[in-house]
Amino acid sequence: MQDIIPAISAVAGYVPDYIMTNHELEKMVDTNDEWIRTRTGIKERRVLKGEGKGTSVMATEVLKQLLEKRNIEAKDIDAVIIATVTPDYLFPTTANIVANNVGAVNAFSYDLTAACSGFLFALETGANFIKSGKYKYIAVIGADKMSSIVNYKDRNTCILFGDGAGGVLLEASENEYGIKDSILRSDGSGGDYLYMKGGGSVNPPSHETVDNDMHYLFQDGKTVFKFAVTKMADVSVEIMNRNNLTGDDIAYLVPHQANKRIIDATANRMGIGDEKVTMNIDKYGNTTAATIPLCLWEWENKFKKGDNIILAAFGGGFTWGAVYLQWAY
Ligand code: COA
Image 1 (cartoon, rainbow, N blue to C red):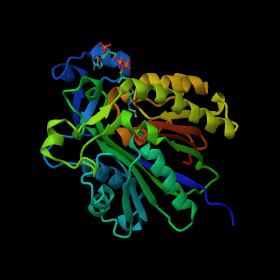
Image 2 (cartoon, protein in one colour):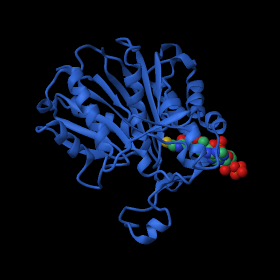
Image 3 (tube, rainbow, N blue to C red):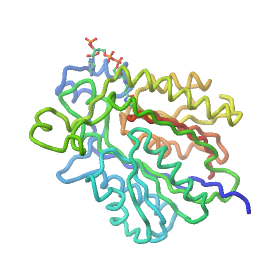
């Protein structure tokens, strides 16, 4: 029997309507539009407004779109995997909520956490479910409501993040194209540079954790930047080398959108020009697990069957990785 090649058969994305511009942030912290644009490439980001609205609101829209685009019913879905660091609750999982919202009654569903690399870790997981031959349709979604853990009094971090969700449907390829290779890595010694101190079992929520801003994301930006620049490029070049690909062979790099300078450095190391790099950080900022699927969604019409595409990410943990795929439709 021939090996099953897992392939992306549909992509979807959702961003909330509310646009938070750099100028709005100027009124909240001591920053300015020029600094933010030149240091990060970000002009604006989206924020999910409304009482009681969590990450599942955005992820549900994504899953509905995936079903519509592929023209399948919710009951046909075998699994829903959601990568997120901002789940609606610690449990039940956001994926449980989303699957229920669309009526995916035959799906098992769970969340997976690998911060900004979450989508790639979930994609590898879903792809292997397809490869096993046991499942037909797996939905892999990256979704984060970063505004729920960002401190809008901290200029070092609040300018960077936004809310959004994106996802893909995975199934067995009908041709020779699909997900071909992946390299995923983690290094827990980087944990202290990008994390949320409070809310887990070490520092459960209390008056003290709230008073000490421990429920906000903390980042040592300089250190994270240094690791991200090196590791994201290393792994992207490694996956190219082991698949005998040169810059000329690559149709697109779809990188995690954390900082335009990190993306430029990665593309440079890979030997590819700007025209081959998907970039929407200017509009959405860093939406954590959602950046890569949001790029796939916005570039879907440009991709051609058989295009060699590299996905690459770096994030808290530390976690990082790259996926090599050939666009299948
Ligand atoms: N507006 C104006 N000034 C700011 C600012 C803001 N929003 N944020 C920080 N600054 C100041 C700093 O306080 C510092 O001032 P000082 O020199 O007087 O102390 C100065 O700008 C330079 O700060 P620095 O940290 O060196 O800037 P940077 O060039 O490293 O850029 C980041 C900061 C956060 C944009 C950058 O480090 C980064 O992108 N890091 C990685 C982020 C990332 O990838 N995170 C997610 C991983 S998935």
